[in-house]
Image (cartoon, rainbow, N blue to C red):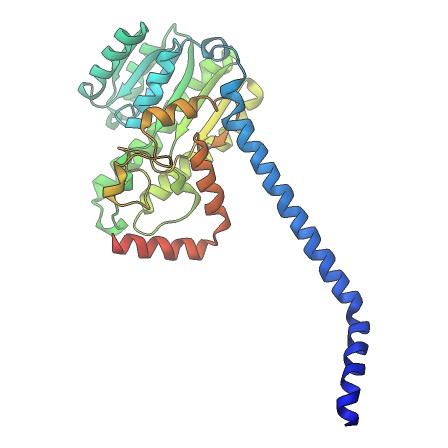
Length: 324
């Protein structure tokens, strides 16, 4: 009976001794909650500032801010083609750099007819190394180049093990998506630096944020473009040049998003916009954010992805890919 009677006394004594610890834990919990709330509010403010305010508040014409001409590399990709159309709609003339002239000739003619802008198609064989840059330099000579848009090849999204890729195919893939994008930036930057204005937009993929099984080349190439853009921004933002890294997630008719099956790749929806819809949103973020998804529902996806531990993300992607 004495042992039973002494338990409440023991409990009260332990509670009294540990009360300071309970208060400390409560304070830590309150601080953590306040921190997460502040982060959430900051992210909400950033979402509004990047994706909504630029579409509401009027600003200078793109030609006045950056220049009258844009160089587009990768216009065979739906997103790059849609981005070029958005630039043309705003009165920007276009130079298409391509390795297959027939693939963009119709696009160039359509933009000239629809928006009254000048278009030039430059056929460049980048297998010739430095010789490929000569026709590009000739096309840019005497023009106020204000934009460069590089876009990765959507064929990167096809699931394939690294050891299954042909050696020559791997070299060509790296050349098209890394070496050529870097070379194009090297060609346009001197003129932009001289004029103290310009914008370089590198369109990669949200796959650069997390590793994915079966998409080694996609993760690597898009990761390079993303870090390349961020490093360039640090180096040239003080010289009046805006460098932007666009990291979209799934886009309709574009299989760049690796975590989707082919049956979903062509479907359209709120989180899977058409290239034209995505480009319309993305171009409004130019000059506002140097690294963004370009489309606010994708930004919500990106925020959710950051909350998921990497090992859970990789495990879920592996299960989904194996079942698709």
